[in-house]
Length: 502
Image (cartoon, rainbow, N blue to C red; front, top):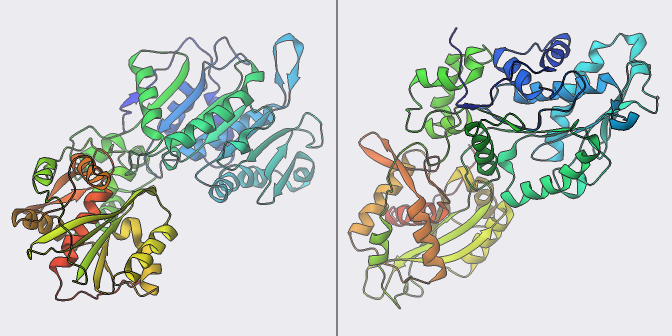
């Protein structure tokens, strides 16, 4: 069976003791025996500096691995194994109870994974007669915590593993010897740094006997904390570091074809380990599309897949018509988009100016927006424009907002499937026919569009090309909004198509 190979990985130091086999044994006892890739990760990440019980070689373990490869299950075995060991022996003859904590994109999801991958399997493995004395599980949403000890959980030195909300204030608590942060791609850089600033001091009292694990797949957005973790991890690997940061990244090579199944076998461990079958991956490509598949499973980094700018920003700047505006009371079409992580909302209007030519205007820019905010903005915008003929949107980023807006009477049009490819073609055609805009250099809305146009990348689709969020090298919500507005304006013969949940 072919096995995936990490693209970047910290090397095992053979002379060091590792707790990897002990964690693998605990997972095996729970019916979750680690596969080869998981066992190798544990062996490297759990190296000790100077034999059993000595400080960890790596106090930070960063794992970037595709979806459904077992990274959370593997990590959960670490605090469970250490909790079963009981108190931690510290320098000077002192000891401290083991405390571990886990979080993810939100408290509900973190709690689900904690119960599914740690607490419930451990409890199920205990004989009924021993369960009452050896473990106690609190399952309140606010306090989900497993207390356990080899002899009696009521012992003052009993170990605890708990769930915490992914906020900096939640981490300002007693000392923690193990911290797991899952789904790192869902945090912004600011959120991630605040988490680190709050979490790291909780590890200080353990004198090198505490670890933090940060895990994620890549996804579609570069506007997250993840690239910073990647850069720190890659630098550690390339510098040959054998302390501090342990880094393992499985991702497809830059420029490789995500449709080539040999690429799947090379960078997606779940395939070679038998966790996921190749037939299922073929179906996933068919359903979610190649770009989404490459980001979620193969860890293709945004901007690493090649592609070319679909619109030259210089062409846009040459199309400026200072002082021009859409004729008041004339039909107007809109396009709206917001980054996949809720960042940089852009609303674009398209209509005719006094000369009869097509004109695009940036109607609104916001640094971030929830789905409710997008819906409210569309409602306010439509109420002020009785001649609004339609608003285009990408269902991948604005589906919920569009559903709410449609309920308020806003005529919305989903730009997906074949429409997605047509929309880019419509934009290029309209620019060629003289589409103008009033935004010169220094105009806030215009500068956002220029930046987004420079970041946008396309990919081939049949005989044409489509805008690819995955290949783009930054935010592109302005390009999507512009594209959608031009597309619905060009299909004015059927302007009042409503969004529907199929």
